[in-house]
Image (cartoon, rainbow, N blue to C red; front, side, top):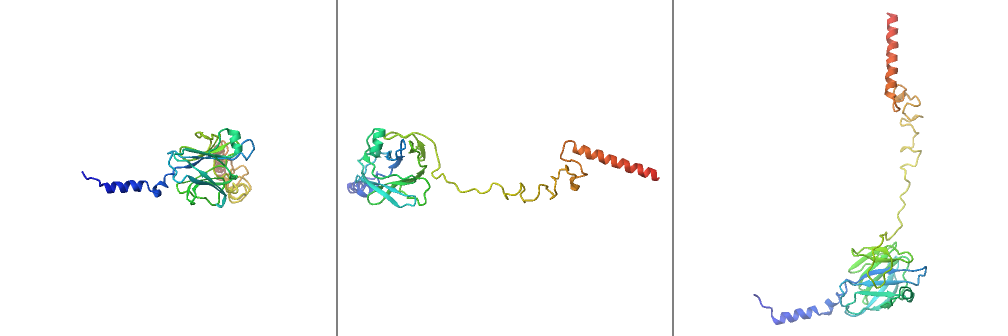
Length: 260
């Protein structure tokens, strides 16, 4: 059995405790829940972060940055994240008054009706970003880039176990509920006219008749090309044609006998 030298073991321990490795130990933190307003009051807002692993946060100081639909920075605030943090709740004073639990930090940036928010290091590394609404330029996170629908008043945008977002009842400082899925951007391109040529009911804009005539081509108007002038498409149409044909043949036979 090969023995591991003390020098190699010491080097391994030092590498594992190096700042470069430790700085990656926050990569599971995600934007878990967002609320814009409640009771018609858009001062009631919060952003909740969630780290399923409760990882260490090496330097403690991070940022919550808000971007507009074009990817431009709209506002930024620093947050101090303690080691082994699982759920981190950033709320306005108005949200604390409505929902009770005080936030881990006060939300000092305004959340727009459509926009993006990122959990970042102070050196500019974007760990995770979430957008809502119709976004022109997406801001990407190093470990997660997600999107969801803008939550209506009194509801929140909540991350689910499958990493999608749904519109749910607010659950500040608690596990997210399941809700209803909705498109991030509800605006769809115009599908155009439903008819091919928007004409008078025909693909080629011709009159109603398939043969270009003035009738429907089913014999109801005595079309020359509808077959012996009878209603082929109507009930008993074939029988009518046979009777007429038989009468014509009988008349022709009698005329031949007279001439004979």
